[in-house]
Length: 495
Image 1 (cartoon, rainbow, N blue to C red):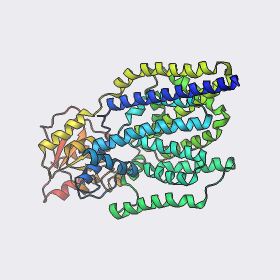
Image 2: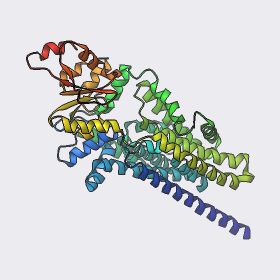
Image 3: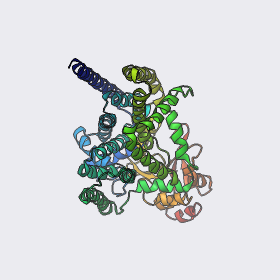
Image 4: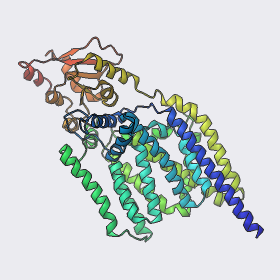
């Protein structure tokens, strides 16, 4: 009886300690989120401008009167509307949802790991690692935390066999990011291999309705079933501007970011070894089949279509890596050195705490400024020095569009119809004749997607005039000056 009492007492103390460690990690996350609250990811401000236009009564659009769907995560956009209305600021609205789901990701993976190994100590290790990662805060303001949470929630519901709720959440996952659909065949494969119970057909009705309603809304409101931004990224991949295998190459460099100091890979190597050890843990075998299969499909999609390698696409790799590390530590303490179980498990907390202390100043310096200050200055300058009704063509539209409050012609075609189709065929100039912007902002020297502007600037047609009062290093602003009589001959030069 005494031994049983001591066993449960030890387990209770261990559980309470793990909960406290988890809560402390959440507190650290809250401090860092507050620290980076003013972060303005360029693409995040695209969402903000859509929502701000809605709040201002101009419709759920980027440019007033132009019904183009530039939102690849409609669920993130819809959820952000609520705090945006309450706070009367769309930027704070998207940041609120992003931060809330960063916390939610901590919670769901804590419970997921505990479901797999029935051990709170190792579940808390996931939370420790997540707060140490720079990429956790690098993507604040984007939909990446919503996506990682929905993946974790679907995995949790799958292994608990809550099929009806799982079906609903899969639908929401696909609305969070379309690539979430790859979790479906991954779960189906594991269900087949392990002869798990298949969900009844009724579980497929609600997710099908959710996705169908979204597609119908897209068609009725934007006159297109699919988002223009999603298609634009595929077209950009076809253009070849990003180079071959850019997504895969960036994947490897992303793991280096936040895990190494001055090129030292020791910490990263230890984490990858621990993650590899998790493959031997029998209780997590089905989890590995589902998650790794999902990552394979997910990676193949971005690689085959050569999607531009944006930072937020890689968040799911980090989240699953931390999960594998926690499971790897469980296997080591359970199989290799069971006598030192408590020593290793609690020692892991202190090791990761040391990583946190070491990582925080690195994070602060490597993250850089919370705002793309030069783009912010460009936007403010345009708002003060150009007519309100004027249009500006630019590659990076988020920050400049948010602060300029001008009609934006998107050179990449995320929020401007038909531009991306030209890019897919390597045509970087025809969009100028189609949209005829008042101003064109380009890099100096010209970047890949701005080739057509260089050709027009070097012609003797006089259609582009440099705005000399726009004096910012590394960039040039041109005014597109073409009268009605000479417009067509001048445009022939660039078509």
